[in-house]
Picture (cartoon, rainbow, N blue to C red):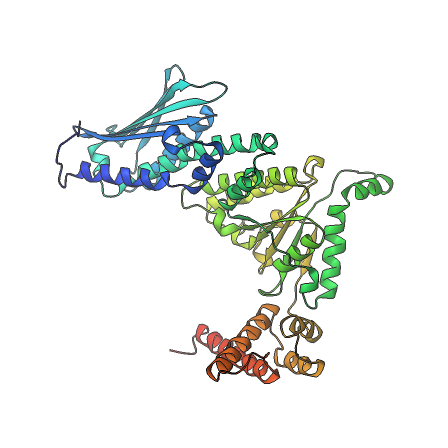
Length: 480
């Protein structure tokens, strides 16, 4: 064994340090840390790792808790396929063999085209706890040929540690927390923990107080969102009774909505404000945070995220899940990424499930700037499509009233005329520029605090539009 021996720059020693670094990185996983706090557990109590050099072999032993041994076997096989993919250049005809060794134990062997072993793994139940909890032993032996390739040992065990060990622990303890939520009503941290879990999947529970009254203009859009989306959602029982009277086919129709249009036109704010005014929970999903750089993990993260949102809705009542930039998933007809296709399929499955009566407390609203980039099957899952146009002059005047309320009607009209073609987000930015420049002037002159006047807003609008034109020119290649 390697105890006390100085290996210097021996490639196995370097590989050992790389594996230890990979394990250390995954042990700092925030999701599992928060779950551990919730259950009063330390990571050391539910996960043991040991890395050592034995002759020409690098051996890694991991022991961890699981509530689903079969799931972990499947995860391990998937991870091995990923290892085969990233090792395809040096080992183009590699083979993965799986054998059952009795007592619910499995051996996995990865070999090159000449059947020379590169590494092997043995997974078994180490011990059994009360109930359905098991302690799993995962024992890996890497040959020097494989471990000595720069970066391979680290990449390999990062994958195993993240996608098998840590993923298994997260699912095990996340399930325990969710299952016990209803029994923990006296625990002040119960709901906070569920929100904390959601946050780690790129899901944010909105707790602000933005009202529809804070949004200027767009009266026609506001009416459509209220009538076509939130009223049927909130009064689902009445809609069901009405359709008993009017329809032969009484099944639920496609639910949810999609907001589309140029960026900065208030799509997210509109949904958030109307949800707030109707006492509906609002959860924001960032697609970019769902994606993982680990092969095969993104679709699993999407499934877990949506299951957690469903759990939140069942516990807390009517909930909207707002999926931002859904176009970033792409289109399965043109996608070169099998990973994106898997994520889309996971979302399609969950969207179909929302139409059932048991999911009546959950509704999806998606948002995009690029409607034509969305997969058609995915697009068909959303009943209502609402276009958010660039604001007209009346809209801009109403928006200005929310950001520059000290201006009179004539001044607001002048300001609105200066912002033709701009969005609500642009107008907010102009108002901020005017305020900041005004503060600079009065602070330098040591003058009393006053509100900006119309000239400040006009100057800010001119500065903003001038800067925007320069930026557009540069991006079009007009500047060298």
